[in-house]
Structure formats: C-alpha cells, structure tokens
Length: 470
Image 1: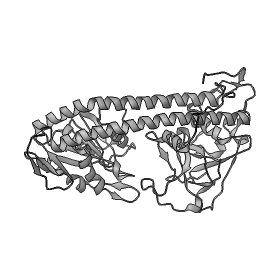
Image 2 (image 1 turned 90 degrees about the vertical axis):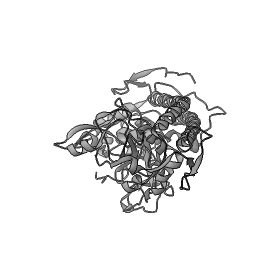
Image 3 (image 1 turned 120 degrees about the horizontal axis):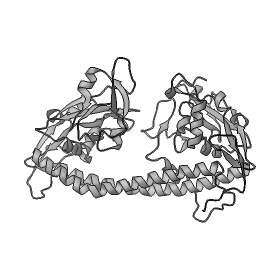
Image 4 (image 1 turned 180 degrees about the horizontal axis):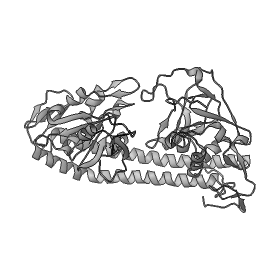
C-alpha cells in the first residue's frame, strides 16, 4: 500500500505530534478512560504484560513461566478490552488491552475505555516512542529509574481521538500488517534455529571426537559422552580452571569503585565479551575487583535462570578488560593455560552434550540454579593444548558462513521491527491515511502468528515485585 496523506491537517498543540488530520480531537485520557479498581475476583485467570505483544493470559502450565501466586484477592480485575499498564514500566511499553476478563498485579493501573475509545488503537498509540517519552514527563518518583505513572497523572495526559470508525479501521489495518511482519519474523527465526543447530553439530563433534576420523577411540566411562580419542583426557572443570561465582550487583554503593558489569543478557546473547560492548555501569568493592575483573581467556557462564535450558550458557573473553567485572547470576571460569585454552573451554561448554550436564544438575521450582560444586565437577573431554588450537581454528572457519547467515537474518528481523515501529507511529498519529484500505485475500490474521512478534525480543514484566500502592 502506498502512503497516502489526509487531505487536510490542523495544529494539534502537542509537541510530539505537531499536526493531526482535520476531524481528529485531542482529549485528556480522563475523558477517554475510567479508572477501574476492583479486587476480590480470585477465580479469574492471571494476565501478564510484555513489551511487544501486550497483555495476554499467563501460561501457568509452562514451567518456565510458572510462579507461585499469593494474595490473589489483592489482584485487580481487568475486564476484556480494558487497558492495563505497569506503573513503573509504562515508559517501556508495558501495557496492552486485556484479551479476556482477568487479574493483574496491584502494581498495574487498569483503565476502562469509554465507548468512543477503541482500546486496541490506544495500545498502539501508547507504545509509540513519542508517547512513551511523554509518559516519562508525567511519571514521578524518588529517582528516575523508580518513576511511576499513577492514574492521576495518566488521566491528565493528552491523547489523540480519531473518529471511532477510523480507530477501528486503523486497528484492522495494523493487525494485518502485524500478521505479515510476524510471519516474516517467524520464518527468519526458523532459519536461525536450523543454522544454529548445524553450527552446534559441528562444534559438538569437534570438541568430543576431534578432527581426525581415523584416530583410535577409547571409552570415556561416561554414558552421555561415549567414546573419545585415545590420547585425550577426561577432566573435571575444577582441575583445569578456577571457578568463581559473582555476587556483584547492578546498584552503586557509596565508598565503592566505579566499574562496568558484564551481565546475564550480555553473556546470553553474545559469544564474546569485548571492550566495545555497551556494558552496565555500577560500583564494586576492592575485593570484588581483585577476584572478578575479566582477563583474556576467561569464560563466563549463566548460573541461574527461569529455565534449566538457559543455564550454563557460555561466553568467552578474548582480551583483558580492566574495570569490567562479572555481574550477579554469573560464574567466572579462569582456565589454567597449560591445560586448556579459554576459547576451547568456551566451545566445549557450549556443545550440546557437555551443556546437557548443567541442564540436568540445575535445581529449582520457579527458578533454576547451579551450585559451584556442580560447575566444578562438570566434565569435558580434553585434547592436548596444540590440538585445542587446531580445533578452535577449524571450528571458527567452518562456522563463519553459518554465523554470517545468522547475523544477516537477525539484521533483517531488526529492520522489519524498525519498519513496524515507524508504520505504527505514522498511522496512529494520522500521518498516513488508511481509511480507504481494504483487506486482500492474503491479509489473514491469526493470533498464533501475532505471537511471533514477541519471540526473541520480548521482556516480560509482571510487576509482582512492586507493592502497587497508589
């Protein structure tokens, strides 16, 4: 569809959208929504909000998302179609329209739309970058990262009001575009999954069998590992690396030294940790700095998570990083260079069969964790150091085209998301006229397709850790 402007515009009086179509109004949210504060409905399903896909029913059967619910009588009822937003994370887009009657945390505000307001339209509008900047201006708190958008401030915020029929048309148009974009993302995610599986097969074979298919094998004595080359050792991590668990938190404390922190997400999303990464700033004690400053060859692993499959994920530190420490939830493995290269240790821990040890050893109910004893007694197959160097170079060469293909697919996902954000912002603010748009035969919307919008980029925010006092 070609971009079409409305025939005429007028000044809006709003800095974040200077002009709006003739016929659109600007009203405060208190004229569009009523404040719903209803508790005492413990039998309703629990709702949760995510930054991309909005409000949805929580999957209580999914172990990764399972949480023990307490004091449900204090949870707020959100009727189908109500806007629910997390007071502390509205500025990030933690809001959406309730798909069914359900319960949200006391840390949420529930806004019930008046008849002239389509809550799906406002879900799109409120998540635009320009509107979220306005949310920051209306939020209040002791410090900026604890700011909350209370109902009293939310109801004073000005919003756009297109005619109801135009709101409905905008929502229909954007849902169709979302479905197309979601299917594109889903296909790219499947490609990434297949390429990653191929990469892991290459690595797994190299670090457990070596590169010489004719070499004599011997039983490892470990069922899941099977046979290994006869001249390799079977080593416990504690015999080839110093295992250190970090307790450094992300908060700054008086009297401590400024540092940068490599955190859980940095490790989970990157193979390598380097000095040019945008790492979190915090402070640490002299003892923490001495014990946890990253050095060339170090390997960092995730040591707890909501899912056992996300535990033991490694990243490698190829160069010294003065002033950079491991954050909480991470383990630091410092290899003994005469026994193992850091890069080989990284590859070995990331291989499917060896990583499975951590998944099995992780304990927990709603959150899983590895103990230091578990990490120290994990096993790897260990070739001589010179052979490790050869294996690492071979892996790098073999995996390079796969990694480049993965990177291209991820960049395409990033670009399509950016396009989506621009399209939504233009349509909900009237910079593009979609009144004459009609759906075509391929413009099918399925909820399971739309779910792909949240995969990979989603940050779920329950708000249950907040007291929700208003």
